[in-house]
Image (tube, rainbow, N blue to C red; front, top):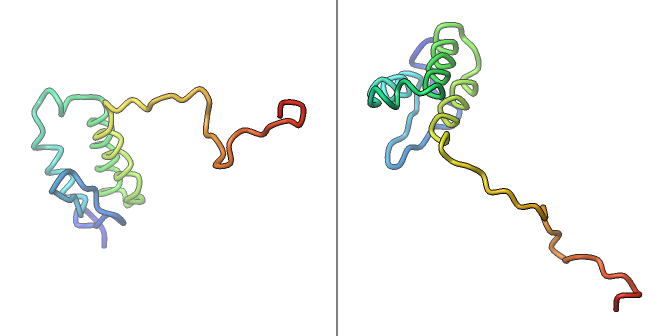
Length: 96
């Protein structure tokens, strides 16, 4: 299947709504308020969407653009200690 009716491999969930096809995603972006629609992340998502729909690229490219635009205000929390192993820190014999 080609064009705007192509489905995503995995639908994008936005609350109760699911964006199943490229057309669904395009309509969702077009319905956004002008201030949000003009954000650079949404513009990049729309460019990726058009590229995939009209150029025949992988749908994952468009999906990544949409998910990044949806999560643009999320700031990942930095943990300076890194991931701790499930068994804890190693103890040296001299420290016991």
